Image 1 (cartoon, rainbow, N blue to C red):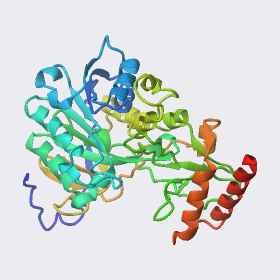
Image 2: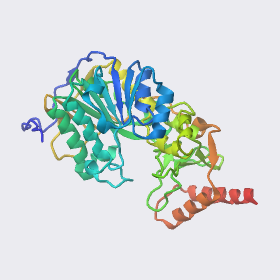
Image 3: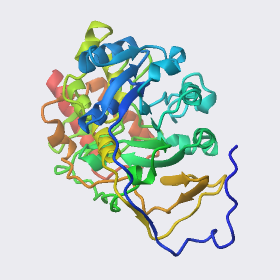
Image 4: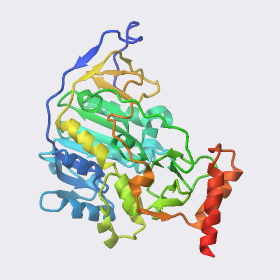
Length: 414
């Protein structure tokens, strides 16, 4: 474990002197996308002017999408990260890696970096030990900050420090980018090139918008119809985080109670747009796998709008400032954002939020338009039954709205 500078008694309190870091040099990157999926991160970076040169992805259906969308003339491909060599990374200045989250997610086996999927992030460090890549951008679920008291995040950050990188991380919500999907992800930028705070943590502080109470007939309510016993995933005028579905390709789209009282789910085209892609981005996968597997590809993707913001910041960093900050002590709860410069870990309480920008977000029913389909009567009946038997608290008008929608569905089927 990398030794962290022992804080003085004065440092244990907030620093009163302001911290100001000028904008670091801009950078247009040559990108190697590892665990590329359907290219959400790399697509956003390209929109910001960066150049994808290598994509590594083992899933055949995802690879079909990558070949279709990124072409073969300007981009090299590799299917197995375990067979990737330092020679393959010649000319690369940025590695991106949305590494597997199955062992780090509360919906998975929660084995951490010992799990057979999430431990593959070790392949990134294998390559970094043998190369001199200036910057690395990792992405994963923020539950890794809690699982095992944040052991996975600690291990990753320690590895970066061993290799001589400064780092900063931040949890970002896709809703900040006018996407009506509550999708929190942690992004870690490690750099030998510049101060990573000027990329991830700079800019003015944006407060997360406060939710108002749901109003039937005026608002939409997103929820997971597959739940109902222990949780629902309420999302006012939005949807909860899109999921990849089951390992055998059974989709699990969220449901939306519309202001008109209908209950629908997004189509695959609507889901693609909720991830920042244009509709039909994953069409090429249909020639490789079943249509239902497109949900897995989309649910596991990195949001393009968030990636575009990251790409813009990499290309044009901004100055970073903070009125107060304190040491990040080992064993403490991981905050929403932190950094390590010259071996010293610091954080700024909650002054850096999950909303790096503030863009007007359409309510989910307006965003999706006609890219919806009815939730089946069977699914609606099962969810309503589970919810009524549970001890979960619900908005006053929600269960009556479910019962009315179910009655209407049954009458439609007569």
